[in-house]
Length: 128
Image 1 (cartoon, rainbow, N blue to C red):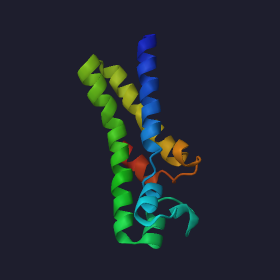
Image 2 (image 1 turned 45 degrees about the vertical axis):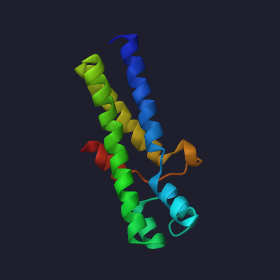
Image 3 (image 1 turned 90 degrees about the vertical axis):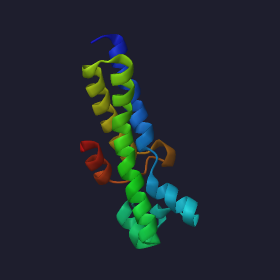
Image 4 (image 1 turned 120 degrees about the horizontal axis):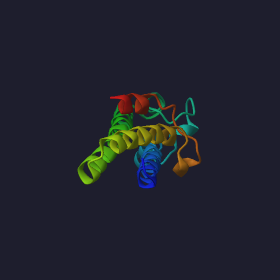
């Protein structure tokens, strides 16, 4: 592998981290209710705390967004590297790096003071 390959993989790890840092529970609770879900219940920004605190619609929206961000983080390198560079090895490594970055970003989001979720749903979605 070349230096460029490692650079591409690192950039996708960073992109996955930034995508994962978009914490759906915090965003949905702030936009829909003007409150931070982490200030209520278990203090977690996950779907279960959203359900207990703000109801079914907010929890369902959180679940869908968190699930999709793992899928998007994994598909982004596939689309860009496979189509653009036609390198299967770099594409797979980039996808793995983006998946790990997304889970780490979900757990420790840079946008929300490094206080995130547990990463269970995002881990499941990147494994799919």
